[in-house]
Every structure is written in structure tokens, then in C-alpha cells.
Amino acid sequence: MTDEPLPPPAAPEPAPETQSPAPAPLEAAEVPAAPHRSGFVAVVGRPNVGKSTLMNAYLGQKIAIISNKPQTTRHTQLGILTRLDAQVIFVDTPGMHEARNPLGTYMVQVATRALQDADVVLFIVDVSTPPGPGDERLAEIIAKRGEAGPVVLALNKSDRLAPDNVIPFTTAYAALVPAAEWMLVSATRGDNLDDLLNKIVLSLPEGPELFPEDEVTQTHVRDLAGEFIREAALNLLEEEVPHGVAVEVESFQERGEGNAFIAATLFVERESHKGIVIGKNGGMLKQIGTNARKEIEGLLGGKVFLELHVKVRVNWRKNEADVQRLGYRPRE
Ligand code: GDP
Ligand code: MG
Image 1: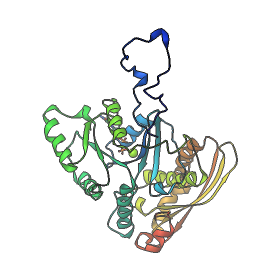
Image 2 (image 1 turned 180 degrees about the horizontal axis):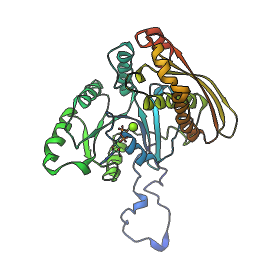
Image 3 (image 1 turned 60 degrees about the horizontal axis):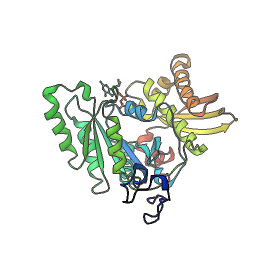
């Protein structure tokens, strides 16, 4: 959609009352509009750098869910930003932080490929502290993209960057991804967010709007429901258990008006973990359910009845077949 239906320059609309003998300079409205751009932006950054804050600043509370297009199957959609001249589809690439076992290795492969699929990578870092091993690892994964497309580096939390550190820290981050364009921003204060977004938009390929806004498909909602449950568990449980939790949504029945009945099972690796996930008098599982239910209700807009079970699948992370069965595979 690069051509605007402008009148041919040789035959302008007759407008006698304003016509002057010499050709008038182009009015703003007659200047060909910038081409429409669209594409997928992989949002990458270690925990706590401000990814969610930045996404919320761009997308507000609204979660735009999009249909299951082949390009997006290795991603979790964070949201779509639609403006007149561009549609930016922000996507998450799961698995960038896992390692050390078959699931971890597999997830890093998935993340690497997911990054290759994205049109642009938005790498977010906390510029108020120097780069750490987490940033370096992500930079390595990003580097595997090769020439696949632009990388935009958001140096976030610039409001907390001490003047003496501006040059050394900025330089150190820029050196991690030499090809990236970078910008100092503050997601909480809103500094430079418009400029950053414009940089992202200009890095996208020309193309039409890819998704109608607010398109919701059930397959995707079902996946997201599973993710919300896993996230609720990760947030509530002690360090040791979380990575051993997988979620399978067994039943998802829409009841109209955003209401739904959902049954899901949390798989843990050990009998002792099962006890932790269920908690005293079932308190932990109840809390996981409550937190997840609120998230899912926010998404669907109605009332959700959530039924959770816990099952042990011994060492599922070490077992390739279970890793695949529990959905950790590209859905092509
Ligand atoms: P995420 O884990 O990458 O999603 O990080 P969050 O968005 O959850 O942010 C982690 C913490 O950093 C929160 O307490 C945010 O309020 C804070 N934070 C995010 N962006 C900024 C920023 O630009 N400046 C400051 N000072 N704090 C920020
Ligand atoms: Mg976050």
C-alpha cells in the first residue's frame, strides 16, 4: 500500500478561486504521504528492565489479541499498535532465559528462530546499570539474526542514569549490538517514547495493516489462558519449582458474553513439588487460580470459572517427548 490515490500531478483538481498563474508550491495535503508500514517487533530484554512498563505505555491496558497466523506461532503477542501510517505488532519471544536442560536448549532454539521471524528486534536494557551477563547472552542470541533485519536498542531508565555514567554505560550497551540504532528513554517518565516508536516504525517494512484491531480467536485465547496460569504459578511459587511447571488447558468452553469455563492441569516434576503447588489446605493452588482467573477475566471481559488440577510428571523437563507434548514446540 505504497501508493496513495492522489490526483495525477498534471491534472490537479480545478480550484479557480485559489489558482495562481504560476504553479503553487505543494500544500501539505498534497505531499505524498509516508508509505504505510507494518510488521512484527520482537521485544527482548532481561527481567526488570522495563519491558512491561514500556509496552503498557504504548498499548495501555488494552491487550490486542491476534489470530494464529503462521508467522506468529513462535511468539506470544504482546499487543498491536495501530496508527494511520503503521501497524506495529509487538511480540514476546519465550524461552530466552532458560538453559541447562533439554527444555532450556530447545527454548533457546525456539527463541532464536522466533527472532529471525521478526521484522525488527526491540532490545530493552536498563541503562542505569552497566551491562550484565543477562544482557550479553541476549545480545548473542540477537547476533544470530545476522543481517535478518534492524535492531533498535532502548536504553531505558535514563531518568536514573547518573551524569558520569552517561557516556560509559551508553557506549557499553551500544557495543553489545553494534548494528543497532539506540535511544535513551524513560518508560516511567515517558521521555523519548515517541521518538523511539518512530524509530521502530521506520525500521519496519512497507506493508498494509496485517490485522484488524481487536480480532480475537479462541485458539489464541486458550493459549493465553494457559500462559496466565503458568505466570500466576511462577509469581507465587518459590524459586525452585517454577521452571518445572507446565500448564495444559484441557477444556475451554465459551459461555457467551465473555464468560468461560476453563479446566487446566499444572504439571510438576516431583511429588514434593505437587505439595508446594497445592499448598496448605489447597491455599496456594487457590491463589494461583484466583490470580490467573482475574487476568483471564480481564482478557475476556466476562466471568471465568477456572478449575485447576496438579499432576506429577517425573522430570518432564529432561524428557524430550514430554517437553513436546506439553506444548513447547513450534506449532507449524
Ligand atoms: P520487565 O520485567 O522488563 O517487564 O520490567 P517492568 O516493566 O516490570 O519494570 C520493572 C521495574 O522497573 C518496575 O518497578 C518499573 O516501575 C521500573 N521501571 C520501568 N521503566 C522505568 C524507567 O524508565 N525508569 C525508572 N526509574 N524505573 C522504571
Ligand atoms: Mg514484564
